[in-house]
Image (cartoon, rainbow over the protein chains, first blue to last red):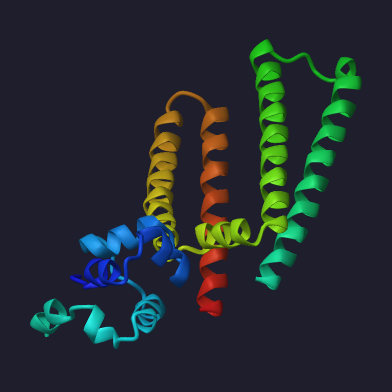
Length: 69
Length: 146
């Protein structure tokens, strides 16, 4: 799944480690999310979106899933 | 984090107990070694290696838990490492594939060994049954829990 995590993280001048610590996951998980290898759980998606003060849809791109419907 | 701190304390107590119990069992078995059946040197070596390995692991893990309990940042890092959802998914996927490989491997090995040795056949069948029972029991447990 495509996300805006890398872009938002850079805007906020955060490292992957720092974002991971803030939302309770490891740096490797943030890396996997950024490259689209791993899809976040609803709870993690909520935490990340809340951290950046955005909605889940503004951070995560659900267009691939909508195409499947 | 307080709940996790308590969890670490329980873990420290349990590992200390297990390490002490393993040392006690090993010392008792060593003292009474002459009354036990004579074993090939490889098995003795394996016992020593397993015991030393376990004790070293216990000490390493105890030090890690104790350090984490004293340092909030270290404790949070340890908590995240243990509860990371991607790691959980990796473990679940590896376990699912692993159990399938183990079950199929044991079944095939049991069938083949049946042509050569009854002892090996029954040992493998026993192992296969044990794994199946544990797997089914855990399946029932989680089916009722989730």
